[in-house]
Structure formats: structure tokens, C-alpha cells
Length: 130
Image (cartoon, rainbow, N blue to C red; front, side, top):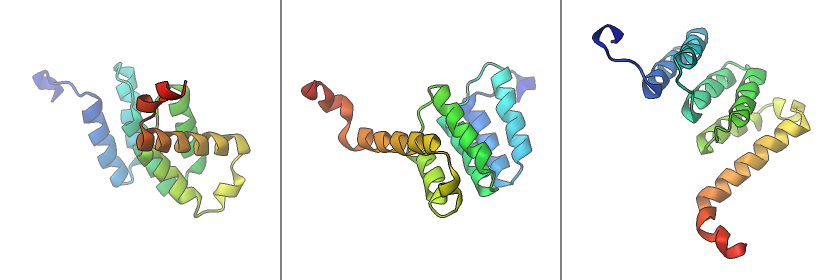
């Protein structure tokens, strides 16, 4: 691909990372994650959700939560899919009780605000309140 002058973008990397995650080749997925950043491409919410999901599938909870916090630190807004990946499994495991209160608050509040934003489209009615 690159030999023909076509260079991968975020969408290309996400497709490759998705395929590697489905094959349970997480280390190779991370290699692409780091490679895309080294080439000046920024991971987006889809990239992070793919890695969070696979870490969750493999039981790597600390890494899944680390990636989620990294998303927030980089001002990448998680969407409903990201929250579903984390919350659906957290509620089924004992890990939910072992989370630090601050991380749990961040996750739940962020999820709640995302849902509110989608349902009520805050941008439309917020000026009416202020």
C-alpha cells in the first residue's frame, strides 16, 4: 500500500486494530496503536474503544480503565459504545466493587452526561436555561 504512495489514515489503522483484536492479537494491535501516533495520527474514540473492549474481553481491567482515563485526559469524548463496553461488564463482575471511588464517579458521570447530551441535545435548550 505504502509502496504505491497510499498512506494509512486513522480509519485504516482502526480497521486493522479491529481485525487484530478480533483475532485476539492484542500486542500487535498495540503496535499499530503506537505506530499511528509515531506517524502523527491521533487515536480517536473508536481506536480507544476497540482496545478497551479487547482488554475487557481478556480480563485486563486495569489496562481498560487506564485507556479510558487516557481518553479523558486527551479530551477524547467517549461515546455510548465506550460506556457500554465498560459498564456492561463491570456490573457483571466483582471488579465493579474494587474500583476506586474516583474512577467510578468519572465513568458514571461521564456516561450520564453523554446520555443526557444525546437524548436532550443540550446544545439546543441550554441557552434557554441560562
